[in-house]
Amino acid sequence: MAQCQRCGRELAPGSAVCEGCGALQQPPPSPPSYVARGPANPGNRYPILRFAQTIIRVLAWISLVVGPIVGLVAGARNGFGGAVGGLIGGGIAGALYWVMLLAYAELISVALDIEINTRTAAEATAHLAQRQ
Ligand SMILES: [Zn+2]
Image (tube, rainbow, N blue to C red; front, side, top):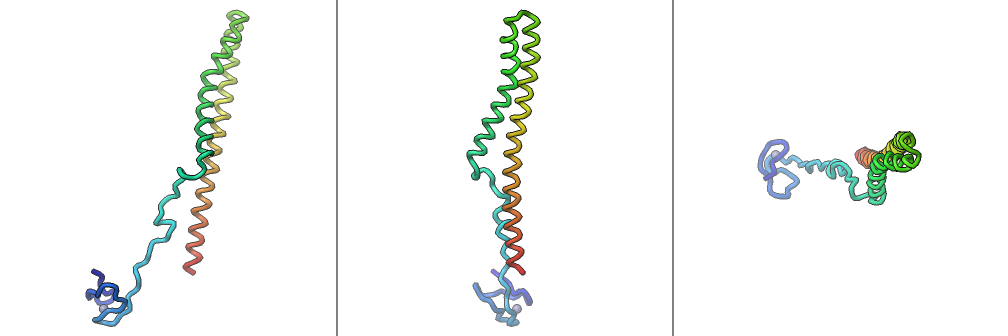
């Protein structure tokens, strides 16, 4: 049961004016829309980007593992020295691909974060403008 905001007397349901003191009752403040909805949910936007991000991460780890193996196998045709050289070269190449692919996957996260921040800030600004 609502109470009068001035004298505390119980109000009739839906009443905008107190029967006791005649005070006009202000409607309760509703939370701003961008707060009520909570943090923006990124999961249901840009599904392809997120799918690509997952694939890129998987490829990064595959290249890190496969790079030295391929180098070792290819170098082994030239004896022990070739195998060691192939292992090192393949390992370096695999590690470079690993870093670049993971960095690319993180760039997608950065883009998505910017999108979320921009949208949240725009909604907050629009809400503030409405209150003027
Ligand atoms: Zn009252």
